[in-house]
Image (cartoon, rainbow, N blue to C red):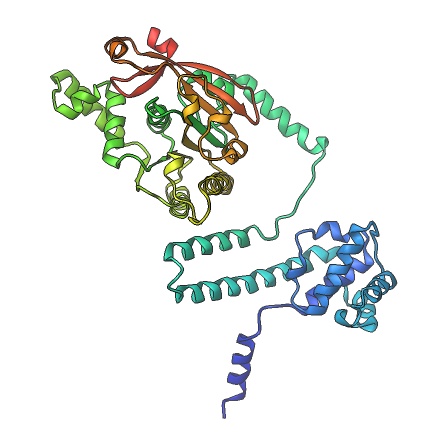
Length: 452
């Protein structure tokens, strides 16, 4: 015979967390206060534990949606009768008893917070049980289990958030303060600066939660643009940034960062024909780069799940404020059974969702289709899916004449005039930024700086 107290403890451990009195208090307050529903919009039907309470809350919500802002006991009972669900709600006598349970309707938000807390605990048990079961399912990759678990936990952290409203009276003071601050510092960039003044003027810097797409045909310098920005952000601004390279190794990326900062030819670095002056510049640059908060991720054929997991880790543990991805076409979708078009749509949606979740800008490089060769590129030239155009907050294209063997020597000396064309800007103007591409150093500079 088990000890009575031990039996009782085991029994309670098997009952999911709940608080029936708090649930009754919420429902009773809803029947007494016509403004109560607006105060607890974060509660859902599944927030309640008792089946009869779920049914009562579901029908009260329906009555509110129908315009009956104060459904009383009679209205609620008749509605349940018409749906033949009165017994499922506990009966007329049970519903009539609910208002008497409420000490005061003024505390409905407190009662609702208890109901929500119990619901979160039940959901945690459900998530942990799912993780436990999936861990024994050999058909599910381990990384997928981790990603799904992270996503479920993140959803639970957002539970209880409710829509709110503000009036101009509440917002105007803080808005005027921001405008006055910008007036005192007119050159200040509100987001993460790219290092190109004309681009930053159009965008006010890359804004948190934005997805920025940089598109170009192969060989036009997408990676060079991204690394020029990355170098400025991590070196000049000392802002932690991550660079996901699916095309080049981390050593290759670091070599290019060294070359563009030291102004040493990539050919010289590869061949070893380096002068004493260049060696000194490389040494100085190496010292600067060594101290930068730059995080390089080298993983060919990276899946979107891996990218999301590592991005969360970098932002949480290293304080990363902006993420670069080179490039979209090499990311592996979660569902490989989908058509390529749908896989790219899934990846695009995931990146935008990730930018919002982490509240950092994500700059992703993208290939353009062959129709863009030799022409001014546009949104229709993005390779893979129209979803990229839809999800992105900013879409910009690199446009310049492709090098020929005759122009290669002169371009090494003078650089190649290049347009960075902003074709979509969800929250600002579009326009063209004039840059100079220096193929010798694999970097971009502003046209004005090159002339100076």
